[in-house]
Image 1 (tube, rainbow, N blue to C red):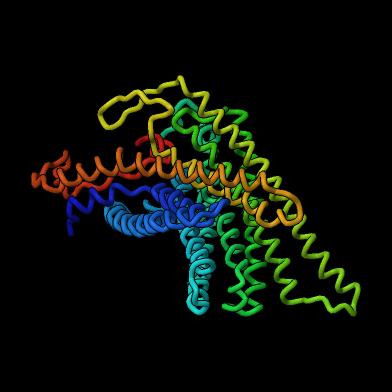
Image 2: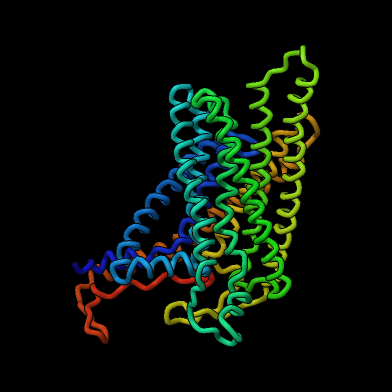
Length: 458
C-alpha cells in the first residue's frame, strides 16, 4: 500500500532530539511549582507549562510511531536499528526521551504531595508515578546499556574517512564528545526521581516496608552506577577538549550538557541519603536500653548524610565550573560569524541567531537549580545555607526564561514554516516522478540528520 504524501511529510519531521522540548518545558513546570522562593502565582504558571509538556510528549510519541512505520516500510528493521541506535551521531538523542518523561512523573508526584487534599487520591497518584518510574527506569537502562552495547558491538561506518588515516581515527576526533553523555544521564535522572518518590510521607502508606527498602536500594545502585559511568565519559570529554579544543560556534551550547549529571546527581544523592535516614528513624526507633544499638542507629544514617553532602558539593562545584566555562565560551563567539546552508540558501549566522542547540541549556540549568536548592532545603536547619537557595533561584530563572525563549524561537522559525509548507504540499495534487519513475507519494522519507547538523539549524 502506498502511503499518503501527507503522512510521509509528517513522518519526515521526526528526530529523537525533539524530546528535548519535553525536557525543557517539563523541568520548567517543576521549577515553577516548587520555586526556591515559593509564590502562588508561580504555581499557577506551572500548570499550563506542565500541560504543554504532556501535549508535546504525546505528539512526539505519535510522530515517532508514524516515522518508525514509514522508515521500516521503506527500508528494514535492521536499517532502522543501524541508523538510530548504532550511529553515534544520532543514538545519544534517545536519552532526551526518558529525561523528558521523568519531569512529568516528578510533577505528578508534586501534585500528589502538595495539592491533592484527599489522601486516598494522593496515594493513587503516588502509585501511578511509581509504576511510571519503573517503566522509565527500564527505558533508561536500555539507553545506557543497550545503546552502549550496540555501539561497542560493531563499527557503524557512516560516510568516508575524509582526511583521516582510518575511520576509527575519524571517530576519535569527531564523535567522542558530549553527546555520549545523553545516553547515560537518564540513569542519573531516574535515580533522583526514585529518591523523590520515596521521600514522600505517603510512600510508606502506599507501599509496604519491603518495597520501600527495595526502592531505596535500587535508586542508590542506579545512582552509583550512573555516576561511575558519567565519570568515565567525563574523562573522555576532558581529553576531547584538550585535544580538539572547544566546540564550534553552532555547537558551543552543548558544553552545558556537562551540568546535567552534576546538578541531577547532587539532587539525587541528597534525596537518597535523606531517605535512608528517614527509613531508619521510621522502622528502627531507638530503645534507650541498648546503648551500642542506639549509637549505630544514629551514626549510620548520618554517615550516609555526610558522605552524600560531600559528594553533592563535589558535583555542584564541577557544575559551577562548567557554567562559567559555558558562558565564557559563548562570549568568545560574539564577534564570530559562520556561513551555513539552509535548503538552497547560504546564510551567515551569529551566536545570537536561534537554533535547536539552544535547548541544550534548558534542562541542565534546571538540574543545577534542583541540586543547589536541595542543599539549602536539607541542611539549612543545621548550618546557614541561604547562598545555595539564591543560586538555586538564579539557575531556575535562567532555565525557565531560556525554555520560553527556545519555545518561542521554535514556533517562529520551525513550526510555523513547517505548517505553511505542509498545507501547501498537502493541497498540491500534482504527481512528480523521480529518475526511477516513482511518484512523489512513493518516495522514501529522508533519514534523520546527525545531532551535530540537526541542532545547528533553526
